[in-house]
Image (cartoon, rainbow, N blue to C red):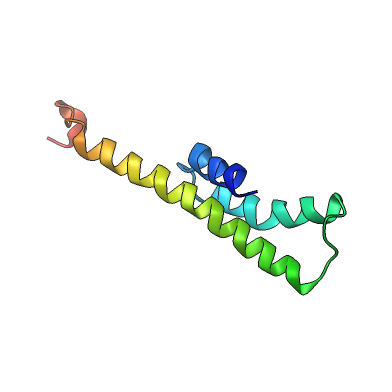
Length: 82
């Protein structure tokens, strides 16, 4: 569970809302569909942990994205509002 959800966050982290939504909704649905868990209050905890794990991947992706943007030189030209 943990590596797959972190990988989901890493791969789709540019659009942060997508992996977080998939983790929060999709993981509990998968658990119920495969009869791993029943619909109980523990399913809310499973959803929260899935959200947290995907959030770690999103945070790493966003951090790398911001570092690359900061290190990359700004393009010259009229598109910059000159």
